[in-house]
Length: 124
Image 1: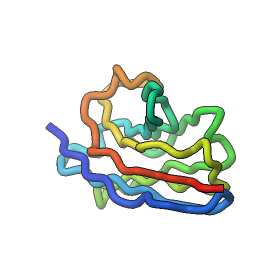
Image 2 (image 1 turned 60 degrees about the vertical axis):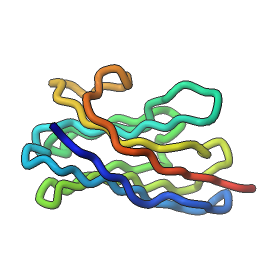
Image 3 (image 1 turned 90 degrees about the horizontal axis):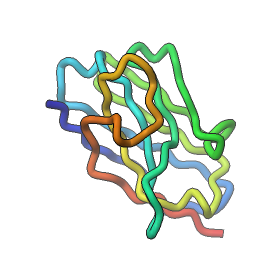
C-alpha cells in the first residue's frame, strides 16, 4: 500500500511557473515508477509525465515536452513536477500516481495508487 499526498499548485498567470510535489508513505517508494496525470472538467484523465523507479528514464506527453520536468528524490520519498511556460490549457486537476510495472506507463489504468489531486489554474 502506498499513500500519496500532493502539495503545490494554485493560480498563475500564463507564462508563469508552478511546482507540484508528491510525498509517498511507503518505504518501498523506490520500487515504483511514478507518473503525473491531469484532468480538466468534462475531459478524461490524461498522461502528463512519468519517471522510472531509479529516475533514469522519463517520458512526457507532447503537451508537456520542453515545458514540464518530472524528477524524484528516493531518499525523501518525493516526486516533483516543475511546470514552466504555463498556458491556460494546462488548467486542470493534477494527480500523481504510482505503478509497479517494469516499463513506464502512459495509461492511467496501469497505475495502482493515486494522490488526492491538486488544482492548477492558469489565467491569461
